[in-house]
Length: 300
Image (cartoon, rainbow, N blue to C red; front, side, top):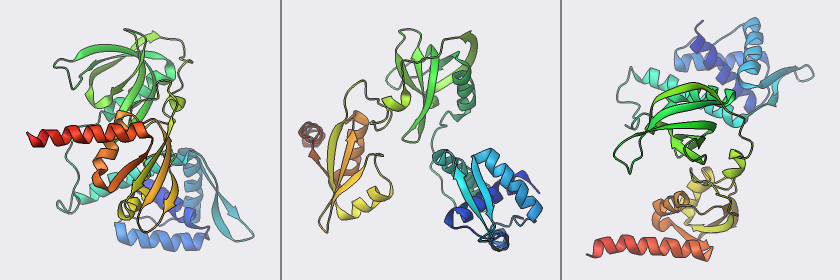
């Protein structure tokens, strides 16, 4: 049995047991049906399933136990659910792309430049071991790339891009660097003391995108969406602080506790006429001014 089939079976076991506990026989029936769909051999013996339980615990920090009273297996503990979801999603995409090679026009993916994910493992190693990192970095508003030496702190994802948050040794300020603009990355043997005066989770707790809070207090933001657009916002919230404060046939209002940064303003503008800023007044004014400047481009 291939490793790919084992990983796919892990995903299906987790999916099935997340929905509801089930007996081994029910799980077997489910896996056999999925085998017919995917063309993979996903069925397993009880002995193989017991091994899968151990591997799922090791790989995903998801504990599956047998409940004698209900004669069913169930998930009794799940660690970092967000990381697990991304891992499983990535495998789903990988599997779909592999299958799609047989059907070239059945799975359409966006054409884009590489995301710099080849740097991820090296950067995580540097973060874990407090090692300085050197790389060439290209800014979109500069013609030439520059060599940077940084002390990495954390890796952050924002708007389908990956960034390294690091202290630049040139001025000792914490900055973000897009992995897709990095090249010639090298891990040095120079170690630095752990950076304890910067908490990335706290810095980005109330932020949208890659622009941090910079020590400012977040503000209450109220947005009014059309009923149709609100359905999309409900299914994919703009921010984890999102709350519905009004929902009727005419509009749906969402409240956020957030830094109204450039990234957030660009997101509001991208939604266009389907959203209106109600609070705060300064954000509403900024949006109006930006829209007026945009309109002026078309009046000349």
